[in-house]
Length: 255
Length: 265
Image (tube, one colour):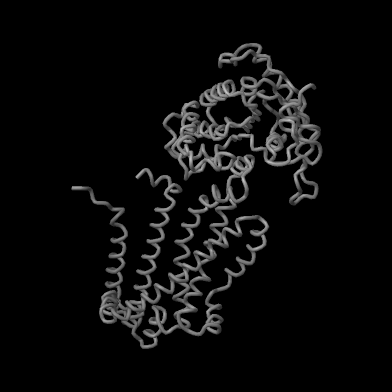
């Protein structure tokens, strides 16, 4: 009999403990269901509105993934461009920081103005909110090439493109894959944000409708669905990171 | 001088472009140096005396503000391609196995660059042979971060030599190693130089290292750097590590120490 693996079990124990405590607290203090529904009430909402929750989750999933995909392509390209040269970096960095500082909730109305309500603003918000970390990480990876390495290659007559393909790009990959974990979470926030402001589908929209109808357990069910979706996408990105850049996680080889 | 020297720095001044301050730094001023083909020279001097600048001048990574640099009789107008370099930091690429790290220069330098794909096995064998000659037989399939500091530095030497350069530039390559490993590597370098006869410029802070390895030693002044003293090491080759404790050897070290103390002011 193998010993009980506390580290593996810990996440499940914490989740179960939270659910139990929550359920107990709601009953013990007699909290009204429209203030804070108990987990059992949320579970009922899941059963009752299962189909609607599923279709809206899928809607949010694909808008998020589409926005994220655009962010990856654009972020990678811009990151390589910005990291190519110090002058480009210096020129564009303040612009990007400025753009990133704008709360995206303020951008959604403009997107609605241009594209109308629906999935387009959700995809674009997901994209706009999530490309920044990708750009910064890729550019950082390129900018932190060891000067000695650059000297070794330049003394051999290497062109900038050689240094980038042999050293810069492989070097920035761990930064890139690391940034995907952050970016996917942000993209998700972006699409849900846009859905709550201007959409007729998606979890964000569903939550708003449920709130208007005073279906508080359903509001919470939407939140739980969001959390599950968020964790899943994060997990996929974390797995991808380990898979693609194992060399950067050296201790991982010891296991 | 009848024959032009392999490396000739003629009255070189180099001022780095200003960043914040208006002046810019004058790294070397009135630097004169000649190194003959196949010679092993060492450059010693106080910290920040422009030794690394000298390395960059001799490999065509930097150009003099005034004066001229000639390598093999021709003025240096760009990276020289005939040089291999090794530094204090071995800077291996962690995503490549040691053999692939060693082969990196061949992916850059003509004509290997074009032949690399078709003659992969032949080049791999060359790398394995070179690794074996520095005591790294069988380590080629390991990643550099699986190797000790001394082994990484050996691999870094192999990378500097894989394209059979005529000039080897060493910038304090053993400074981060423990004393025993350092002495082992001195012998590795000594033997490689004896076998292959490439011209070597070693920049170091370690006077024993300089005297043990070099034919001639240049003492540089504090910044802006120039050559203060040129000392021929009249210790017979081949040199074994015992030579470190012989009076003639110690005398040269003491003499150099005096010059550097004076240069530090």
